[in-house]
Image (cartoon, rainbow, N blue to C red; front, side):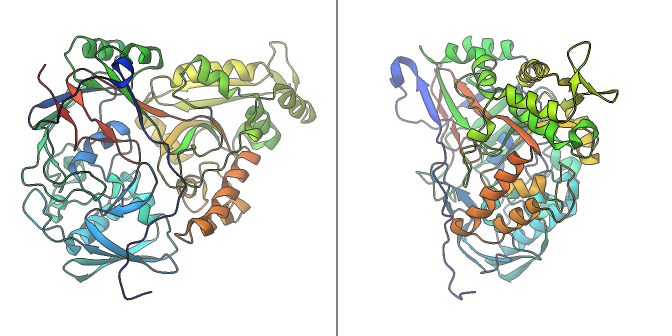
Length: 534
């Protein structure tokens, strides 16, 4: 390891950038930004937690992102890792040790310094959360500890290579909390009590199923190096109003009761692309929405069956019929906006004849109701999902029709999010329907490795494990690339998961809201947002 600390950038392909549309082809008059005012934004899902270290859903992360700063930031356009609370860093050649030099002068909202002791307290605190840290615990797998080298130098160490960790330090899931925050229980922090960050906003209140309120952090001057200006946020306050019904959400924006809304439904997108409204869209990097097969259960243990399902899904029809052009058909298990994505569109082409041939070869014959059978067994599997994405039911019902055309019965089963999470952790499913947002290919290791999530229930030591470990062993894209590409190819080739479409974030802004942006993981960034008088 070199003694001199250096700033290291990940060499990655360009990420898809957000696009925005506004009245008259982008001519909406916004004027210069003005400080002050309140942005009221309607969100679709009531967060059950706002602690970014614990929460995994967008609803909570869109709040938590504003409350905490991260050691690094990730450029949404290029994927490069850039300084934030850490001015520079050094990565050991074996990717097991990361040393961060922190900037001086940053403080948490309780006045305590953002220093190396706070880094240690935060990462140790996440490890103590265990499975409750839905996303962050995966980022700290094999974490062995943090050493306080001096007040502003922290060294984070792992038992195994962890190339993904540098990008992980840019996420809100590893955002730093003050040591005093851990005096509160995890449940209290979920409700915002004792949630002490160093971000440009501070927590104010949380009314379950109604609203969450955050306020400006006065004196904030330590924003990311990627931000175009220094100083405080413009907004005095942000109110996240929980409006689950899409029609009510869009109606409230149209009538001026809300300044902005998230989760614009595909059918409503055109409504906010002209006049006094505007919209912004950004594809989510990470694992696309997919039917993840439990290869140890029922008919999905047969690889020919999984391959037949892969071929029977018409991804373009899903995007064209149920969604919109903002939701691209999947071209791999990773979204195209993910660094080191490999285009496998040809392997995912719609091929119902090929699907039927595979099922014929495997001995599945047409039954009396059109569903195939073999030795008295019905070609049938269930898919469990939650309604975190409003269109999931419609998408799955269309996929159900597509699969039925080749004699496969897909039983569509919606469940509350906690139940789906519990069943996923216990392996109690046939197909699992979900996506995971992350701008790093290591999300595949978290999900597929037999030493991590292993949602496919594979045997240890399989070729996929080898490929996933290879991409985790170096921060250099030239080294990681072959491993990441091989992992994507194996997942598609063996149909461990059936990619369907890429999720996008679609937000709509009314005439009073401006500069609501996305960060690299497609979560809201409100530092530059401002409101004009209504």
